Length: 430
Image 1 (cartoon, one colour):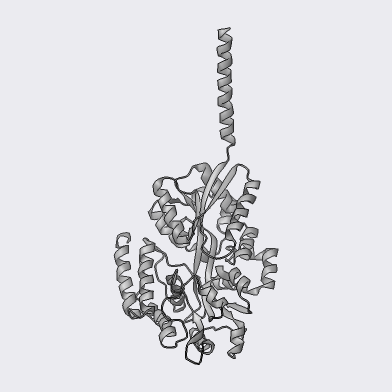
Image 2 (spheres, one colour):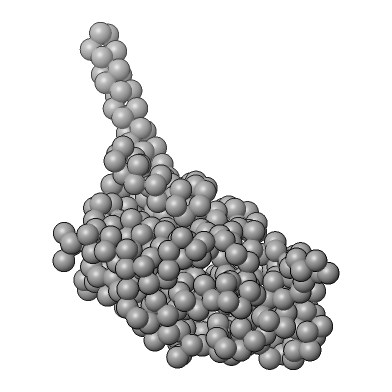
């Protein structure tokens, strides 16, 4: 009897082991991912909807979106999580964070996961301008998702009041200055009640400035992320143009102009033209209580804008199963139909040309032609400023821009100081 009892016990234990193994095999693969919420709009609801829809189609995968604040907050949290040993599996971070993430050995390239002809076709489906900040050293480190360029928004009613053609935005720097003079309004005491133009100089000043630099025919860095050209004469001239809008032409607010409140200033008619991300398009469409226009940025020697926004990255400290699951989600989130719908819902640029051929996007653009402006600007777009030790190299430029705009340094001195600091920071990467 004792022998039978022992056999029964052993059989029961092995059944438990089999059941546990079976349960483990069926446990969903968990994919925590950081998502920055940096631009207005119901983005979290959209991402939650993506997670729910994806899980319905892929019951073996559990997506866990973690909303992590601004892009700066998100990269800081991601790198802290890498050091603590519990990073996300994937994350949307700035395309310009690529070198930092590589240097910290935080991420893996996508190339090892690209196995089929379908995968290879998918990787080639994105706009080349967006891939400039996604690939280096022959490898693909980021996948474009929440991408943008800078565009000019303008108040058509203010144009009419100033005697300007509301359907003819400024095409050149000189025209923008001339328009801004007509659009700047002052009360009886001389106080400005409406500025002609506003370019934000907090948050991402280097990004707005880079548009002026590209338009003046030069770039701010090399493709390897090891050199900057902050003190080139053309770069100094671009900053001088911005400073002149403030001091000489008196058509732009003095001091530091806040990134976050610039759209609000536009809605409240405190400014007639503003430069900001196409990612604000839905925000402007929802909140502007007047007829507005969207245009490509005006040209200096040429047209141009840096690209901007976020890429998907894959983190090294994750299991192969987690990486496969994240890769499946990233491909799912960037199909033509979803890239189109994301652009419609948020105002970001749909990241692949075939997204613009979908019925939904064609219908959207037919009813709202402004949505196509950022896409049409992509042939003139260049990679956003990105280098090794990116945050400190970029901060040197941000400090220089603010020094020039507040009048504590001349544009030339400010940019020479910034270049000296960038050379020092990048010396070890050359």
